[in-house]
Length: 183
Image (cartoon, rainbow, N blue to C red; front, side, top):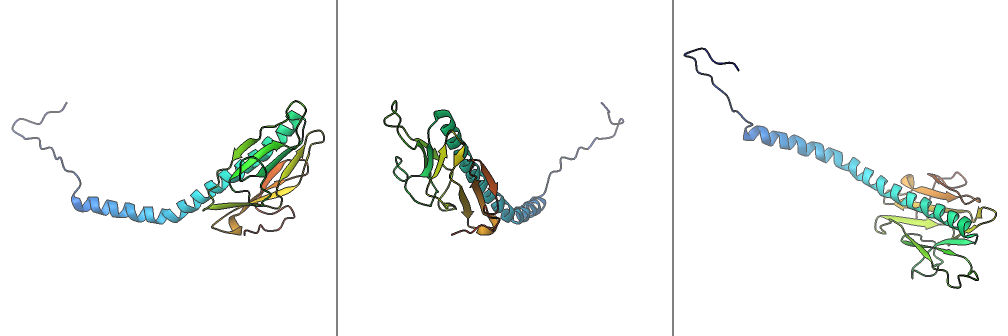
């Protein structure tokens, strides 16, 4: 430790920030936050869209796998009452995953529900089919395109395209290569 020479006084300055310096720092921080806000809004919309698209792809994978495991036809479709397919082309909300026919050992097949992370006020999911059917022996499914749209419109829409083999792929265009259309 260093000591001052005899007869000299060591002065320590405990100087902090002044009020003006603090206000200027906060003003700069506020301007930077306002500049970042539009980018953050777009990032959050991208995250919501990605979560919805991934949930749809997972639902398709689950239906395809269930058909193979059970050895029976499986249907993936939207539902309103939680029991039967609604027959609607709007896939926002609750989906039901169930066997197409009853087996001798399972006269009342219990449906398996998949809830999508879709907030109807911010996103919509539309399909060109009211249901997607998967067959077990020859891996096949009804082809479908599930389009996820938000407030930004078709330029940021994404589609989950289900091939004839039942595999989903994610694209920013439809199965024919055309731009997606949002309602």
